[in-house]
Length: 353
Image (cartoon, rainbow, N blue to C red; front, side, top):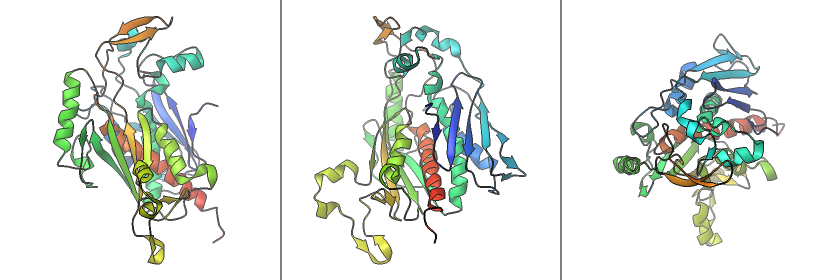
Protein backbone atom coordinates (compact mmCIF):
# COMPACT_ATOMS: atom_id res chain seq x y z
CA UNK A 1 0.00 0.00 0.00
CA UNK A 2 1.55 3.29 -1.12
CA UNK A 3 -0.90 5.74 0.47
CA UNK A 4 -0.63 8.13 -2.47
CA UNK A 5 -4.23 7.75 -3.72
CA UNK A 6 -7.41 9.32 -2.32
CA UNK A 7 -11.05 9.03 -3.40
CA UNK A 8 -13.33 6.43 -4.98
CA UNK A 9 -14.84 7.88 -8.16
CA UNK A 10 -13.05 11.22 -8.27
CA UNK A 11 -9.72 9.58 -7.47
CA UNK A 12 -6.44 11.45 -7.18
CA UNK A 13 -2.88 10.09 -7.07
CA UNK A 14 -0.09 12.55 -6.32
CA UNK A 15 3.60 12.04 -7.05
CA UNK A 16 6.94 13.80 -6.74
CA UNK A 17 9.24 15.21 -4.06
CA UNK A 18 10.12 18.66 -2.80
CA UNK A 19 13.54 18.63 -4.46
CA UNK A 20 12.80 16.20 -7.29
CA UNK A 21 12.34 17.27 -10.90
CA UNK A 22 8.57 17.74 -10.60
CA UNK A 23 5.44 17.13 -8.58
CA UNK A 24 2.08 16.25 -10.03
CA UNK A 25 -1.28 14.54 -9.88
CA UNK A 26 -3.27 12.04 -11.90
CA UNK A 27 -7.06 12.32 -11.55
CA UNK A 28 -9.41 9.54 -12.59
CA UNK A 29 -13.18 9.95 -12.68
CA UNK A 30 -13.39 13.45 -14.13
CA UNK A 31 -16.58 13.52 -16.23
CA UNK A 32 -16.13 14.15 -19.94
CA UNK A 33 -17.01 17.52 -21.50
CA UNK A 34 -16.31 19.57 -18.38
CA UNK A 35 -15.17 23.05 -19.41
CA UNK A 36 -11.51 23.07 -18.40
CA UNK A 37 -10.56 26.46 -16.98
CA UNK A 38 -6.76 26.38 -16.84
CA UNK A 39 -6.57 30.01 -15.70
CA UNK A 40 -8.72 29.17 -12.66
CA UNK A 41 -6.54 26.18 -11.79
CA UNK A 42 -3.43 28.36 -12.02
CA UNK A 43 -5.05 31.03 -9.85
CA UNK A 44 -5.69 28.44 -7.14
CA UNK A 45 -2.04 27.35 -7.27
CA UNK A 46 -0.97 30.99 -7.06
CA UNK A 47 -2.81 31.25 -3.73
CA UNK A 48 -0.67 28.43 -2.31
CA UNK A 49 2.71 29.06 -3.95
CA UNK A 50 5.73 30.19 -1.90
CA UNK A 51 7.21 33.68 -1.94
CA UNK A 52 3.89 35.55 -1.77
CA UNK A 53 4.81 37.77 1.17
CA UNK A 54 7.03 38.00 4.23
CA UNK A 55 4.59 35.57 5.87
CA UNK A 56 5.86 32.75 3.61
CA UNK A 57 9.09 31.00 2.65
CA UNK A 58 11.39 32.90 0.28
CA UNK A 59 11.60 29.88 -2.03
CA UNK A 60 10.65 31.22 -5.48
CA UNK A 61 8.48 28.81 -7.44
CA UNK A 62 6.11 29.91 -10.21
CA UNK A 63 4.16 26.67 -9.70
CA UNK A 64 3.11 26.84 -13.34
CA UNK A 65 0.78 23.94 -14.08
CA UNK A 66 1.22 21.84 -17.20
CA UNK A 67 -1.54 19.53 -18.45
CA UNK A 68 -0.17 16.25 -19.78
CA UNK A 69 -3.37 14.38 -20.66
CA UNK A 70 -7.16 14.28 -20.33
CA UNK A 71 -8.02 17.59 -22.00
CA UNK A 72 -8.85 18.31 -25.65
CA UNK A 73 -10.10 21.61 -27.05
CA UNK A 74 -10.52 22.99 -23.50
CA UNK A 75 -12.82 20.16 -22.41
CA UNK A 76 -12.09 17.09 -20.33
CA UNK A 77 -12.10 13.83 -22.29
CA UNK A 78 -13.26 11.53 -19.48
CA UNK A 79 -9.88 9.77 -19.40
CA UNK A 80 -7.13 10.21 -16.83
CA UNK A 81 -6.28 13.87 -16.29
CA UNK A 82 -2.56 14.35 -15.57
CA UNK A 83 -1.00 17.63 -14.45
CA UNK A 84 2.59 18.45 -13.48
CA UNK A 85 4.52 21.30 -11.87
CA UNK A 86 8.26 21.38 -12.49
CA UNK A 87 10.42 22.43 -9.53
CA UNK A 88 12.72 25.35 -10.32
CA UNK A 89 14.20 26.80 -7.12
CA UNK A 90 15.53 23.92 -5.05
CA UNK A 91 18.46 24.69 -2.73
CA UNK A 92 19.29 21.07 -1.89
CA UNK A 93 22.66 22.04 -0.38
CA UNK A 94 20.75 23.77 2.44
CA UNK A 95 19.84 20.32 3.72
CA UNK A 96 23.28 18.67 3.65
CA UNK A 97 23.68 19.14 7.41
CA UNK A 98 20.65 16.97 8.13
CA UNK A 99 21.64 14.01 5.95
CA UNK A 100 22.54 12.07 9.09
CA UNK A 101 20.46 14.00 11.62
CA UNK A 102 16.75 13.89 12.39
CA UNK A 103 14.91 17.22 12.59
CA UNK A 104 12.52 17.69 15.51
CA UNK A 105 8.87 17.79 14.50
CA UNK A 106 9.57 16.38 11.02
CA UNK A 107 9.07 12.96 9.42
CA UNK A 108 12.82 12.30 9.10
CA UNK A 109 12.97 9.71 11.86
CA UNK A 110 9.71 7.94 11.02
CA UNK A 111 10.49 7.71 7.27
CA UNK A 112 13.87 6.20 8.10
CA UNK A 113 12.25 3.71 10.45
CA UNK A 114 9.70 2.73 7.79
CA UNK A 115 11.88 2.59 4.67
CA UNK A 116 15.43 2.33 6.04
CA UNK A 117 16.20 5.24 3.70
CA UNK A 118 14.99 8.79 3.15
CA UNK A 119 15.28 11.77 0.84
CA UNK A 120 16.54 14.39 3.27
CA UNK A 121 16.30 17.27 0.75
CA UNK A 122 13.40 19.29 2.07
CA UNK A 123 11.71 16.20 3.44
CA UNK A 124 11.19 14.53 0.07
CA UNK A 125 7.69 13.09 -0.15
CA UNK A 126 6.75 14.32 3.33
CA UNK A 127 7.29 17.95 2.33
CA UNK A 128 4.39 20.38 2.30
CA UNK A 129 5.31 21.06 -1.32
CA UNK A 130 3.35 17.92 -2.21
CA UNK A 131 0.17 19.85 -1.43
CA UNK A 132 0.52 21.86 -4.65
CA UNK A 133 -0.59 18.74 -6.50
CA UNK A 134 -3.63 18.51 -4.22
CA UNK A 135 -4.54 22.14 -4.93
CA UNK A 136 -4.44 21.43 -8.67
CA UNK A 137 -6.76 18.45 -8.18
CA UNK A 138 -8.99 20.47 -5.85
CA UNK A 139 -9.33 23.18 -8.48
CA UNK A 140 -10.68 20.60 -10.93
CA UNK A 141 -13.08 19.40 -8.22
CA UNK A 142 -14.21 23.00 -7.72
CA UNK A 143 -14.97 23.28 -11.45
CA UNK A 144 -17.28 20.27 -11.07
CA UNK A 145 -18.82 21.58 -7.85
CA UNK A 146 -19.68 24.85 -9.60
CA UNK A 147 -22.19 22.89 -11.66
CA UNK A 148 -23.99 21.99 -8.41
CA UNK A 149 -23.81 25.48 -6.87
CA UNK A 150 -21.34 24.44 -4.16
CA UNK A 151 -18.94 27.09 -2.86
CA UNK A 152 -16.07 26.54 -0.40
CA UNK A 153 -14.30 29.22 1.65
CA UNK A 154 -11.55 28.72 4.22
CA UNK A 155 -9.62 31.23 6.30
CA UNK A 156 -7.74 31.79 9.53
CA UNK A 157 -9.72 32.29 12.72
CA UNK A 158 -6.61 32.49 14.89
CA UNK A 159 -2.84 32.65 14.59
CA UNK A 160 -0.78 31.97 17.67
CA UNK A 161 -2.60 33.61 20.56
CA UNK A 162 -4.43 36.14 18.40
CA UNK A 163 -8.06 35.20 17.76
CA UNK A 164 -10.53 36.76 15.37
CA UNK A 165 -14.00 37.69 16.54
CA UNK A 166 -16.05 37.72 13.33
CA UNK A 167 -16.39 35.64 10.18
CA UNK A 168 -16.33 37.70 6.98
CA UNK A 169 -16.26 35.29 4.03
CA UNK A 170 -14.95 38.02 1.73
CA UNK A 171 -11.97 38.89 3.96
CA UNK A 172 -9.38 36.06 3.62
CA UNK A 173 -8.18 37.01 0.14
CA UNK A 174 -7.82 40.66 1.16
CA UNK A 175 -5.09 40.25 3.83
CA UNK A 176 -1.75 38.41 3.86
CA UNK A 177 -2.63 36.11 6.77
CA UNK A 178 -5.97 35.15 5.15
CA UNK A 179 -7.91 36.04 8.29
CA UNK A 180 -11.70 35.94 8.40
CA UNK A 181 -11.67 38.93 10.76
CA UNK A 182 -10.17 41.87 8.85
CA UNK A 183 -9.92 43.86 12.08
CA UNK A 184 -7.47 41.31 13.56
CA UNK A 185 -5.36 40.69 10.44
CA UNK A 186 -2.66 43.23 11.34
CA UNK A 187 -2.34 41.83 14.86
CA UNK A 188 -2.07 38.29 13.47
CA UNK A 189 0.63 39.52 11.10
CA UNK A 190 2.54 41.01 14.03
CA UNK A 191 2.25 37.68 15.85
CA UNK A 192 3.97 35.93 12.94
CA UNK A 193 6.60 38.65 12.62
CA UNK A 194 7.39 38.42 16.34
CA UNK A 195 8.04 34.69 16.11
CA UNK A 196 10.06 35.05 12.91
CA UNK A 197 12.28 37.73 14.46
CA UNK A 198 13.33 35.13 17.05
CA UNK A 199 13.92 32.44 14.43
CA UNK A 200 10.75 30.72 15.60
CA UNK A 201 7.28 29.94 14.16
CA UNK A 202 3.60 29.91 15.08
CA UNK A 203 0.53 27.86 14.16
CA UNK A 204 -3.16 28.65 14.15
CA UNK A 205 -6.70 27.52 13.47
CA UNK A 206 -8.32 27.46 10.02
CA UNK A 207 -12.09 27.31 9.55
CA UNK A 208 -13.77 26.01 6.40
CA UNK A 209 -17.34 26.58 5.20
CA UNK A 210 -19.04 24.78 2.31
CA UNK A 211 -22.28 26.36 1.12
CA UNK A 212 -24.78 24.88 -1.31
CA UNK A 213 -24.01 21.27 -0.36
CA UNK A 214 -27.16 19.20 -0.95
CA UNK A 215 -28.51 16.88 1.72
CA UNK A 216 -27.75 13.19 1.44
CA UNK A 217 -23.98 13.19 0.83
CA UNK A 218 -21.96 10.62 2.75
CA UNK A 219 -21.93 6.86 3.04
CA UNK A 220 -23.00 4.72 6.01
CA UNK A 221 -20.55 3.59 8.68
CA UNK A 222 -16.96 3.95 7.43
CA UNK A 223 -17.29 6.58 4.70
CA UNK A 224 -19.26 9.19 6.59
CA UNK A 225 -18.92 12.72 5.21
CA UNK A 226 -17.25 14.00 8.36
CA UNK A 227 -15.03 10.92 8.56
CA UNK A 228 -13.80 11.49 4.99
CA UNK A 229 -13.24 15.19 5.62
CA UNK A 230 -11.29 14.30 8.77
CA UNK A 231 -9.23 11.80 6.76
CA UNK A 232 -8.55 14.46 4.12
CA UNK A 233 -7.56 17.12 6.64
CA UNK A 234 -5.42 14.88 8.82
CA UNK A 235 -3.57 13.69 5.74
CA UNK A 236 -2.03 17.19 5.71
CA UNK A 237 1.21 17.03 7.65
CA UNK A 238 0.67 20.22 9.63
CA UNK A 239 -2.91 19.51 10.74
CA UNK A 240 -3.17 18.05 14.24
CA UNK A 241 -6.88 18.30 15.05
CA UNK A 242 -10.35 18.82 13.60
CA UNK A 243 -13.83 19.62 14.91
CA UNK A 244 -17.21 19.96 13.21
CA UNK A 245 -19.84 22.51 14.16
CA UNK A 246 -19.79 22.92 17.94
CA UNK A 247 -16.99 20.37 18.11
CA UNK A 248 -15.52 19.98 21.57
CA UNK A 249 -17.96 22.55 22.96
CA UNK A 250 -20.71 19.94 22.42
CA UNK A 251 -19.15 17.79 25.14
CA UNK A 252 -20.01 20.48 27.68
CA UNK A 253 -23.68 20.85 26.67
CA UNK A 254 -26.75 18.79 27.45
CA UNK A 255 -28.49 17.00 24.62
CA UNK A 256 -31.41 19.42 24.70
CA UNK A 257 -28.95 22.30 24.27
CA UNK A 258 -26.84 20.71 21.55
CA UNK A 259 -29.59 19.32 19.31
CA UNK A 260 -30.49 21.33 16.20
CA UNK A 261 -34.27 21.72 15.88
CA UNK A 262 -35.80 20.81 12.54
CA UNK A 263 -38.15 23.37 11.04
CA UNK A 264 -40.26 23.47 7.87
CA UNK A 265 -38.86 22.19 4.57
CA UNK A 266 -36.28 20.00 6.32
CA UNK A 267 -34.20 22.98 7.46
CA UNK A 268 -32.32 23.24 10.74
CA UNK A 269 -32.94 26.21 13.00
CA UNK A 270 -29.30 26.12 14.16
CA UNK A 271 -26.23 24.32 12.85
CA UNK A 272 -24.38 22.99 15.89
CA UNK A 273 -23.84 19.71 13.99
CA UNK A 274 -21.80 21.50 11.34
CA UNK A 275 -24.05 20.35 8.52
CA UNK A 276 -23.60 16.62 9.15
CA UNK A 277 -25.89 14.13 10.95
CA UNK A 278 -25.17 10.41 10.97
CA UNK A 279 -22.25 11.08 8.65
CA UNK A 280 -24.58 12.45 5.95
CA UNK A 281 -25.02 16.09 4.88
CA UNK A 282 -28.15 17.85 6.15
CA UNK A 283 -28.28 20.52 3.46
CA UNK A 284 -27.04 23.17 5.89
CA UNK A 285 -23.62 24.75 5.61
CA UNK A 286 -20.73 22.34 6.23
CA UNK A 287 -18.61 23.87 8.98
CA UNK A 288 -15.36 22.62 10.50
CA UNK A 289 -12.09 23.87 11.97
CA UNK A 290 -8.58 22.43 11.84
CA UNK A 291 -5.66 23.02 14.20
CA UNK A 292 -2.42 23.80 12.35
CA UNK A 293 0.83 23.24 14.20
CA UNK A 294 3.76 25.70 14.12
CA UNK A 295 6.18 25.08 11.24
CA UNK A 296 8.72 22.64 12.73
CA UNK A 297 11.64 24.14 10.78
CA UNK A 298 13.00 26.89 13.02
CA UNK A 299 16.47 28.43 13.05
CA UNK A 300 16.82 28.09 16.81
CA UNK A 301 19.35 25.43 17.80
CA UNK A 302 17.56 22.36 19.18
CA UNK A 303 18.44 19.04 20.75
CA UNK A 304 17.85 15.95 18.60
CA UNK A 305 19.46 12.64 17.63
CA UNK A 306 21.53 11.48 14.68
CA UNK A 307 21.26 8.38 12.50
CA UNK A 308 23.13 6.39 15.18
CA UNK A 309 20.45 7.46 17.70
CA UNK A 310 22.99 9.55 19.60
CA UNK A 311 22.03 12.93 21.04
CA UNK A 312 23.27 16.02 19.23
CA UNK A 313 22.32 19.61 18.47
CA UNK A 314 20.99 20.92 15.17
CA UNK A 315 20.39 24.33 13.66
CA UNK A 316 18.21 24.15 10.55
CA UNK A 317 19.22 26.10 7.45
CA UNK A 318 17.09 26.78 4.38
CA UNK A 319 13.95 28.79 3.65
CA UNK A 320 10.82 28.09 5.68
CA UNK A 321 7.44 29.61 6.47
CA UNK A 322 7.30 31.28 9.90
CA UNK A 323 3.58 30.40 9.79
CA UNK A 324 2.02 27.89 7.41
CA UNK A 325 -1.56 29.04 8.07
CA UNK A 326 -1.94 31.47 5.12
CA UNK A 327 -0.70 28.91 2.60
CA UNK A 328 -2.67 25.97 4.00
CA UNK A 329 -5.99 27.82 3.50
CA UNK A 330 -6.26 26.94 -0.24
CA UNK A 331 -5.10 23.39 0.54
CA UNK A 332 -7.94 22.95 3.07
CA UNK A 333 -10.37 24.20 0.43
CA UNK A 334 -8.90 21.84 -2.16
CA UNK A 335 -9.19 18.73 0.01
CA UNK A 336 -12.75 19.71 0.97
CA UNK A 337 -13.62 20.07 -2.71
CA UNK A 338 -12.11 16.67 -3.52
CA UNK A 339 -14.19 14.96 -0.80
CA UNK A 340 -17.43 16.71 -1.76
CA UNK A 341 -16.91 16.12 -5.48
CA UNK A 342 -16.24 12.43 -4.91
CA UNK A 343 -19.35 12.06 -2.74
CA UNK A 344 -21.51 13.97 -5.22
CA UNK A 345 -20.45 11.60 -7.97
CA UNK A 346 -21.08 8.64 -5.65
CA UNK A 347 -24.55 9.99 -4.81
CA UNK A 348 -25.55 9.80 -8.46
CA UNK A 349 -25.45 6.01 -8.18
CA UNK A 350 -27.08 5.60 -4.76
CA UNK A 351 -30.75 5.68 -5.81
CA UNK A 352 -32.92 5.18 -8.88
CA UNK A 353 -34.68 8.55 -8.53
